[in-house]
Structures are given as structure tokens and as C-alpha cells.
Image (cartoon, rainbow, N blue to C red):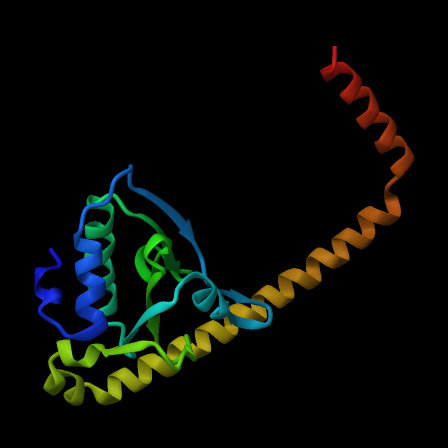
Length: 199
């Protein structure tokens, strides 16, 4: 599956060749999130990338057109060759859109960069995903793309605001419950349950 990518140059070619080589042991995949929409806005733990990998390949995919496909191929190939990988999905599409893949044993990471996911790594190899796209199609839809980008920013902002409201409501409810709670009685009930389970 990676034969087409192996035709590339430099670290990109080297990385694909390493993945293509079978390793001993059973393949294993851990699922993680490296970013999330929070009350503080979009949080991206970009420092994790440098902590897990010395060799970083950045897929600069501003329009989200090619990175998902490339990362899906890399994931399939890595698992088929027995690698242990960490797959990080997009928090807004957590079941099908891969954003980053780490192969710790190779100290290798393939990560997505865009307007929301800023990656600052001077040593990273950058692959501009527009090279895989129909540039005329992108140009002809420039207004639509700008509209969609602005809409996604506004939706993310609204998501953060709703989380703030939910957090505020939770704090108010907790204040009521705390005032009405007799913690000594709760501790007694816990002790009785603990004694029952130890029999």
C-alpha cells in the first residue's frame, strides 16, 4: 500500500520504508486524542509530538482533503507489518478522521497541521497536501472554502461557549448538593459497604 509513497524523497521515503519492513511481535493500536474543544477553546497538546518522536512528518492539510487518506493508508500498513502505534483521531470526527499517528519504536510521527492545529517543529519534514489535490477545483471553490472555514470557527466557538454554560450549571448544582449533603453519613454508608465486600 505504501509503494506509491516510497517513491518520494528523503525522510518521507525513509519513514515509509521503515513502516513497510515487518517487525516481530503482535501489532497493537492505542487510541488517543491530542486535541479537544474545551471551555478554553481548542486545546492542542502539540508538545506531546516532540516528546514521542524525533522524526516528525507534518501533513500540511489546510483543506482536510488528503491527510485523512494518507494517514489511513499509513495506519493500515503499520498494523499489517506488526508495528505498535498510537492513533489520534479528530475530536470533531472521532470515529473516522485520523489526525496523527505515532510509531514509538521508530521514534516516528505523522501529524496533521492546519489553521486549528499549529505545529512548531523546525526539524519536521513538511508535506504540502495541496500537491495531491486538484488545484483548479480548489481555486474555483475558494469562496465556498472560506465560508466553510469561517463557519467551522464559529461552530467551534459556540461549542466552547456551550461547555462554559454546562460547567456553570454543574457548579450551581454541585453547590446545592454540597449544602444538602451530610458527609459523615455518606462515610458511614461507605464503611458498611466496604465491610460487606470484604466478607
